[in-house]
Amino acid sequence: MAEDLHIVTDISKEEQYLSLIPQIKALIVGEDDQIANLANIAAALKEQFRWFWVGFYLVKGDELVLGPFQGPVACTRIKKGKGVCGTSWQQAEILVVPDVDEFPGHIACASASRSEIVLPIFKGNEVIGVLDVDSEYLSHFDNVDARYLKEIISFINV
Image (cartoon, rainbow, N blue to C red):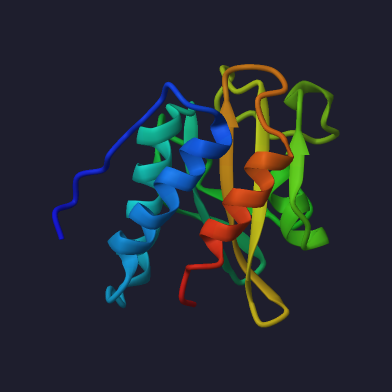
């Protein structure tokens, strides 16, 4: 398959997800390399939505370690329970943070980040990583993002 995405931005956020999801599936179906798939998912999301930062952290021992991402340089390691990513990992829950400055213990990897959504990635009942998305705008993420990003990470073969 050609690795070009068909990006449409003059439609609702939900319609953008519905347009992008089959394209992400096509990018990763048949590819066994997890890093390649995570990289393409991050790139596709960044290209479609123009978010400030989108990427993955993977559980290695007692830390989340930076994985494939799109955006400015990022924190390399995050302890369990620390910041939004570490808290999502610890609680095994999706976290939508309208204002990161209001989140207790927020780790400011980039000062331009204003809101964030983090989704845990599961293998069975165990969290093995997180998808982290940051925006430079307050209150940028909502239940629509949570729903469709959860669907997208369900495609990850771990």
